[in-house]
Length: 332
Image (cartoon, rainbow, N blue to C red):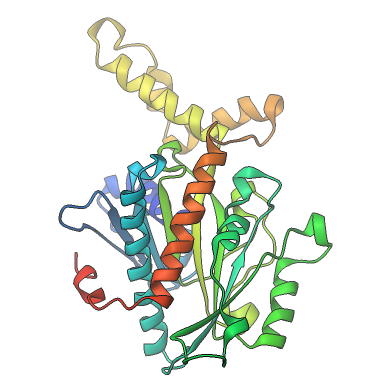
């Protein structure tokens, strides 16, 4: 099967359902649930890859992938962004509790957290991680000087290999050796399959991350297996492949032509091709001219800036502020 480029588990599941689910077969080893809080515009989708069968089908590591979709994230609305930050905080604390239940995190506080802002600050679609770190309130330098905090947070922007000559995983391993954090939170830009998810979707996963995903430049992974420390990954899609945009455009055009009697016969050839074959044909036509082209919205600088505050505030709320009613938000 031709692989449609996406870092979002929810899009992999949607693609599988669209291609194979129509034949009446379920996806073994993968479960999914969706919910929305009352009076909230945030749609939550949880995809759990449960075993090796699910890993092979989805092409992603085993674990939990939580997606927050909020169309209004592209708006300059402080109250709405705070609602997203609060929900992100709830889900971060939920994943920390689950890691403690699995005994991979200490049960007592303070929890020592290292936040890694991955990406290249000089490339706007890849600058989400560094900008989050620019807004992050760290307190490791104050540890032991005042009342014991709930969490001790430090942060690092490791840069990219072109700047440092070192793999991100090498830098993080060195920091882990010196500072001994209990948990890594890695922030990175991602690539999406659908343009409507650019800047409006946050993915939170307990499986770690592969730096460079957002610009198609995969490096060594940051996972509990490679680092010896559990890794929560927070990612936002900032780019989409040009071929995926053309594919969606053609699909919409075919549907429009088919809905009108006078144009119903047009586009039959493409319509009869399986979606994978349609996508491969588009890539073969585009890549000789444009290469593996990725596209980002024209206002990506403002989008990344807003989202960097939203994510950093979510981290602050998760570890610095008491969340008395977390459990109320966990049931769809």
